[in-house]
Image 1 (cartoon, rainbow, N blue to C red):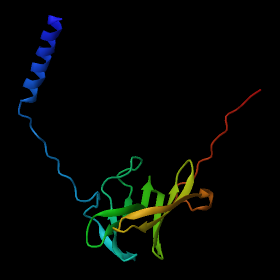
Image 2 (image 1 turned 90 degrees about the vertical axis):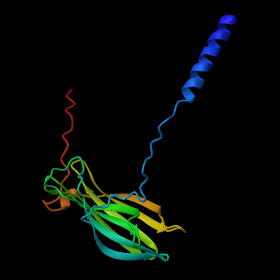
Image 3 (image 1 turned 180 degrees about the horizontal axis):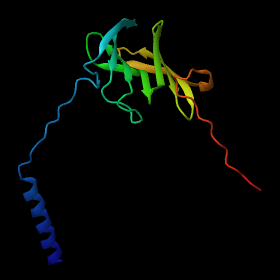
Amino acid sequence: MKSIFIVFAFILGAFSGHSQQKKIKKTVAVPVSYSNTAKESQRIAKIKLKGHVYDVYQNNMNTLMSEQTPNDVLIEYDFTFGNTKSTVANIQKYATIKGKIAREGFYKVKGDTLILTVNYYDPYHGGAVIESYVPDKKGWLREVKSEMKPIDTDTVSEKYIKTEMMAAPYLGH
């Protein structure tokens, strides 16, 4: 019993001595916005939704997607609060992989709704993602609808990535 008390006192002393050591606090800078808006950004439009003003920037991105080569292009649309760089939404406007178009993005304003559409061209499937956003009371965009539609890549021109034909496995008898 006495040995348990001595071990307990030793552990308590070790923890109290460790807690009295001066600890170095590291400060981390918190960014004001979560935008990676490149210096090559160019304001192309100003839109108004429910009394909130947003600027639309076209960004030529410095960092590419993993499948892209240095000769490929990645351009995005950034939607920011008016006169700031605080991004509230973004989509890919144009992306190429090995010189062929992989993604095309579009936006439109319908009433007080921002509709973002991105067409994906992929060797395995093609599709369109359509998302609808409305601003909340503070002006942040809130997604209210999202849908996916298939794209028949056989009907697009040769400058797009087309769906590859998959060979069915041989099921010999």
